[in-house]
Picture (cartoon, protein in one colour):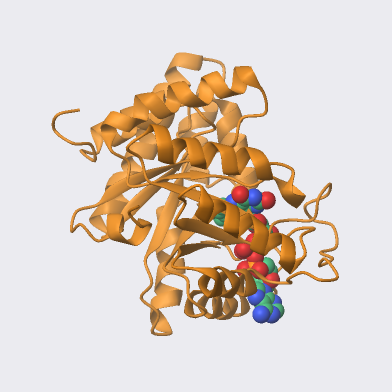
Length: 294
Ligand code: FAD
């Protein structure tokens, strides 16, 4: 099974996609339609998220296992430390290995219920993603990714502290990091500069979400943790009442962000898809990130 890092080292930029594990049969149909539509475009990898406190554990294992068995795609399973003892984490990592998953995104996770609530580690568990990276490394030949935050993680006191812990986490054995959403490319580039400035050259992948509706824009702003940039507001907000015009302008905007990031030398663009493929296919097609035959 190919590793994410192998897919990032091909010399030309690539793209990857993120899905969440289906909750029911209807979700499953939607997800697998998206997977089948994206498969011919040869994404570098597809990642499957992990629900808070292990709520999606079996579905994440099953979905990544199905990707291994039924597609040509390279899967990456997310894993969080929330509400898990180290023994349980070892178990999940063992199941990932058993279904053929070689790539893991090791994140700490947020407290269940209120994501801004107090973080309380499991009494026999882990406190930081850095420890989860070490555990994955200890248990097998995994390719391990971590999360990065262009505006700093909301719990970090400032960007210096955030960079210090991000770099510790990368040096604990991470092969790459995927960034949380942002709407100003300069903010991602500043994150990359901060990491490079302390001598760390681990690949950082920007995360993008196609802005097809006012809802996806609001979600992006919420997840980014930063205010809506005025330039984006001026461009998209006046179109909020015209679905087709909003979608067109939103897809244009994300395509332009992708162009700039590729010109800045990022190895890959990671797309948060919410299990839909159409807009991502449009953007990667316009950016020339798909094989000629597709
Ligand atoms: P950590 O790296 O542990 O950092 C948490 C906080 O602790 C930060 O403020 C950091 O600066 C600080 N810190 C880190 N190390 C130390 C240390 N040694 N000493 C003191 N302070 C330290 N959540 C899910 O539930 N499921 C998912 O599948 C999922 N996938 C994600 C994918 C991506 C690409 C991203 C960006 C986020 C994802 N998340 C997911 C959300 C993530 O779990 C939360 O944002 C969580 O709050 C932070 O996780 P982390 O791995 O960055 O934590």
